[in-house]
Image (tube, rainbow, N blue to C red; front, side):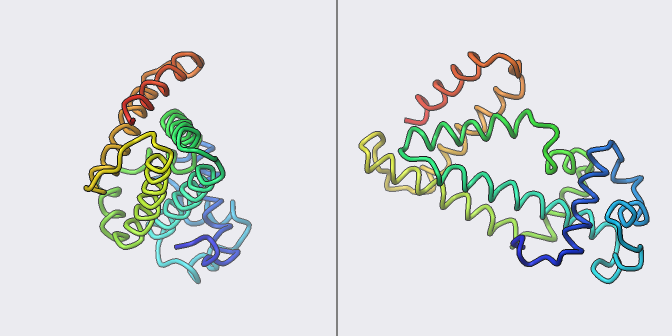
Length: 198
């Protein structure tokens, strides 16, 4: 589900869903007519692309997840050096942990546990492909750390991925409870996370 596989109208519809969520409209109360109006298209046109409101919301969530993940991977790719890549990854985790205006976070927060589970079940292949992209990026960072002599190469590559993910998740949890304005605490937490990683 790459961005360029969507038509202009589908993207208008996804953006309309996101805008409505930003305005505080709840997923369970939003109507297809509301989405159509926000997108500036007819209600009937929406059904040329989607079978139901549930499908619209599901595809809007996946579309936003894809955009945010692609932007994340690009930011990491642009940085040079193992430490810089690790720190930009931690910056992204911090932002994601506390950025409640993120389209993905807004859509997630409007989903019930059952709806979320169903979306995962319906889109296993797609979600696995995006997770694999993330794993490849982590593998590249780890390889860079090894080539720079900062970390030791491990025979178990999955272990390396797990360590990186665990550090990122632990750091993310710290950010959820950390005061957003306390830059020094954030920097200290990043330093500790990096130290744990190496």
